[in-house]
Length: 212
Image 1 (cartoon, rainbow, N blue to C red):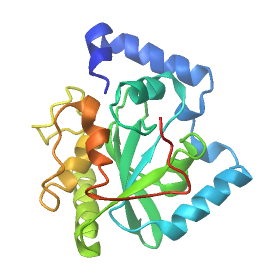
Image 2 (cartoon, rainbow, N blue to C red; image 1 turned 180 degrees about the horizontal axis):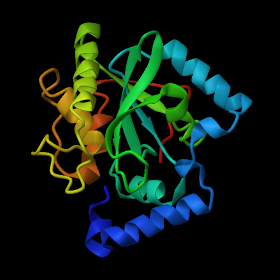
Image 3 (cartoon, helix red, strand yellow; image 1 turned 90 degrees about the vertical axis):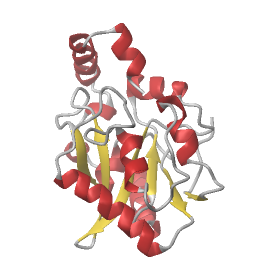
């Protein structure tokens, strides 16, 4: 989803842009642990703690111009700019996802707590896809994503879905589910979220579905 940015700006310009967002104190670039969640955010976190299952794919719409640019380019019917896979680790819900180091301190596949993932989302923008496979298969997909994290997979700035040595956010999901749900196939980054939210492959879950 940053492919056009790379065609227009060089890496240094993107770094300046990302830094500018942070200096403007946009929540998408701030550390969510540095402020207290609102009552609505606490309720949303509690909802997902009750509702999630291993392997659920979480979608969110982030803050800032980059997130909105991604949302506008995507051919999905929903407002979304980022996605990750849920996995419960030692009784705590975590989200495994891949982010560019040009937008975050860490580059590539990483693990965030559920509250961190939600607090970086716009209100009521988080929803999940639960694919129509067994719980064991969804857990296997989440564990596959965890293994990519253990391998230290970096972010795929070339957006080459044929090369699993580096992965952008939706590419991580495609590869994690590749052997379980072969219908999930990337075509073009602009269509990834449309493929991942195909309700013929599962059901959407959330207190609200943020349609465009």
